[in-house]
Length: 330
Ligand SMILES: Cc1ncc(COP(=O)(O)O)c(C=O)c1O
Image 1 (cartoon, rainbow, N blue to C red):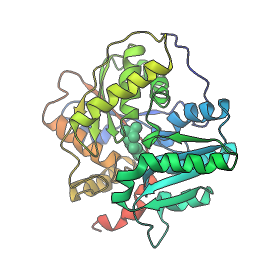
Image 2: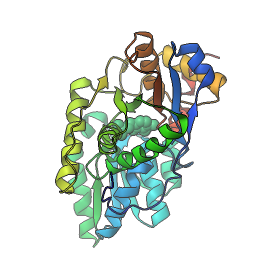
Image 3: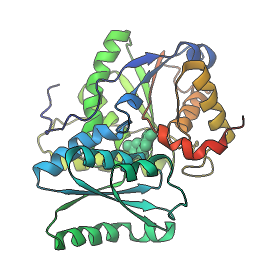
Image 4: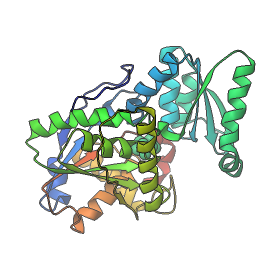
């Protein structure tokens, strides 16, 4: 389907490759072929899923006269790090509102946020959760008083604009499926703020990709993400009237959060280490590691038995691995 996409700024290295995981398929596939869409390769400091959303969000910011980007997330947010580098590359100021006490040491994504020159404000968890909406408003007023115009980008860049990133990625998947002779597949992704899952769910419907999209939630629960995907798509519809009407059905694989967001168990660290050796593929403990563990458990339970091919979307996150190095038992 030919869609009237809004303008985007080319920041991501796309199309990303689709790789077949031969040894992982033999070990864990239960007869399925396992594939990985390498969105960890969308860039280096601008790597991962977020840059696909930010290509559209940054164009929206520039086209509407914004000179500053404000966004929020955890101390090790990949989205915040990606936003910091988008700003640095485009000459936009970036202010990050981070969830957590300022750590004694800058590591992983937080180190990179500073290298990209982003302003960073840390808020203790209770205050962050209570006040984040007000904090956005306060900082926007702060910049307005100084003659600046600041765009508030929601957590994960997940809104009706960011959704375009994975609608566009589905066009790549159409081509990937053709080249790999995939007739039908289950697509599995980590879901944290819902935007990647929303974009994939919508993109599959718009591009008539023969696939079913599943989000493995790394926080909250099934209900939250079913609603979040629907509301991101509703926001997309409201912002871009005239888009073709399509039926979407979000699907969530709940049960793999473990002790909480950002806290991975020994199973996740074990899988990360094993996959590194087996396939040369590096996952992270916050998002992709949990999602991959969830996908393997669902394969073993027969969830995907109606079709042979399973595509895992590797959404990046490598920098979040380093601050969690102590999770590995060497
Ligand atoms: C590495 C990684 N994978 C997956 C996700 C989940 O994507 P989304 O926020 O679009 O649900 C995120 C961010 O939340 C991420 O940083």
